[in-house]
Amino acid sequence: MIISCSNEKGGTGKTSTTALLGWELSSLGYKVLLVDCDPQANLTDLMIKTKSRENADIIIDPSLFALLINKQDLRKGVIEIKDNLSLIPVASDMNMFSRWVDKQDIPESDKVTFLKKALEPIKSDYDFVFLDVSPTMSLTNDNVFMACDWLVVMLQTQQRALLGAKNFLEYLQTNLIDNFNATVDVLGILPVLTKGQSRIDNSVLKSAENEFGKDNLFENVITAMERVKRYDLTGITENKKNVWDKATHSVYIAVAKELINRLGANK
Ligand SMILES: Nc1ncnc2c1ncn2[C@@H]1O[C@H](COP(=O)(O)OP(=O)(O)O)[C@@H](O)[C@H]1O
Ligand SMILES: [Mg+2]
Image (cartoon, rainbow, N blue to C red):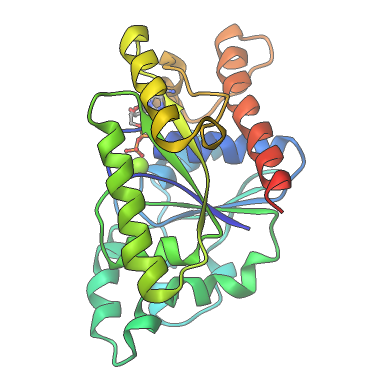
């Protein structure tokens, strides 16, 4: 199944959560593919650092964009990161995808499902395919959401975040579900806590419960951890003797297990 951790804003932990959920699910024995659909390539950088620290300047060839526009098998772009965990990296040429697909002489409904069709043959090779997106609403992101079975909506516990989440869900409903019959559904709203703001956190969580219903919120939340920031520099590490690694992974393992339970309950 295809999942994206998403919302309408940048810097809310989408990429880190995608990487770490993928990491934990693969450790639990599931086959996972991460597809970086953000031309900024943050997920690509993080995973390539994770794979090999010496080789961070690896050349991305073929790029996701090249594979898509030449209608090639996406398997050609797959890089193995660790057991059960693979990546299709992106390069900055993905910036051109929106314009390219818009210029094609095809119906509107095919313009938003171009990526979905490209993923169809490869989807069944994996238990989970995660698509990482940029925060801008574009034809590229429409393609990502059209391809997804499920969305995990990231909710940073800040004052305006609720409105952002509501706008985002409304956008999905009117633009993709109503217009193009997207089959994507929301698996849950995943709170991302801000450091040292437990009072604001709690008040935003309470409002989110009222707005979306308690059942729609993940019980396990993402807390702020310095270790996650450090992974941007070092790549993901999991040293069994390191307490910070352990504490960090235990947060994402809990979310990964809840994700599996939620999927089971929604079957
Ligand atoms: N749980 C966390 N604790 C602390 N910092 C985090 C956490 N998750 C993400 N970050 C940091 O916040 C920044 C933005 O995260 P990122 O995952 O890139 O967000 P997005 O993809 O939504 O733009 C990064 O520097 C990242 O290391
Ligand atoms: Mg990102």
